[in-house]
Image (cartoon, rainbow, N blue to C red; front, side, top):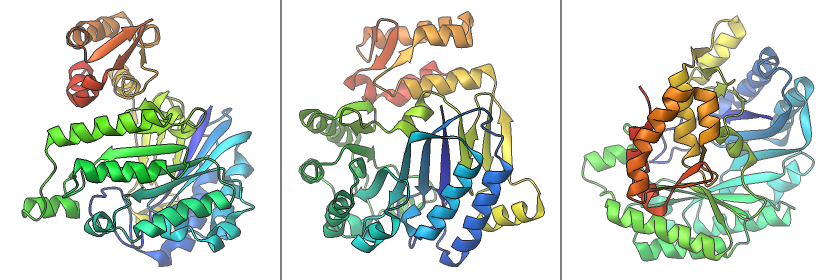
Length: 375
């Protein structure tokens, strides 16, 4: 079981909170698509003997692509990889791209899941973070997707936006849960260094929501989701039964994945690789057959740290038998020595050899993970 991630690093404008690699350069799209296919062919042996169970177009804004461009990339993947018959094939989209005409244009493509970057159903919130769509467009986008036959729809939301109250956040959740969607990813706003939002905070133009309120917003999120039958299968991800993101779950289970495109990351169980974060440098390197990525071999500590940091965030939890057999008795003992205090203070629960965070533990998850990693 392996996955392929395609990074489409184009946006029509940049959101104030975003620190992903993106560019506003629509004239480069055709040339990039050609070179994405070239990279797929160059790396056809990266997941040798693996069957592809998930394909994910992320960004950036994948919905900026035309049907022909999507098709060119997908044809490239299917030509060199064995893709499962019922593979999960997802694309991310901005709400204002999701018109009836857009869905008509892609109806014969093999997409069976869509992730819509809504972030908020409040027009004032959307303006503050420089989103280009409106609340009405967000709701319309979901309905258009449903009318086009999509029955596996995820939306992204952000809580802790500037000036947002707990009551405001509850309204966002009520709207989201009225739309008959199957999956929600909800993230607390962070002020990443170098972003426009971070600069606004440094100048005193925006004031971050205090931690206590952020925690209340998260607990409200969990409560509302549970009431509507959504499982919190990862700290920030909620799904109805049968609708977990297979692609993200594959990451969290430490399966191999191939990343295609500028800034995309790859993982093959023993090494990590990341492509250059520049469209022009990426294209030039592929044209000249020169290196376009960096690579590091993973140490035992690296692999242990990855497993601990990812598995503890999920509802399935950390499997101690797997940890012991995969990473050895020394690291297993190190884990037990450092997790004990968090079991005693009810931040972590242990059941049948599985360790997972309690709601209290989620509030201090970063503190717990820092204590457990090995350097």
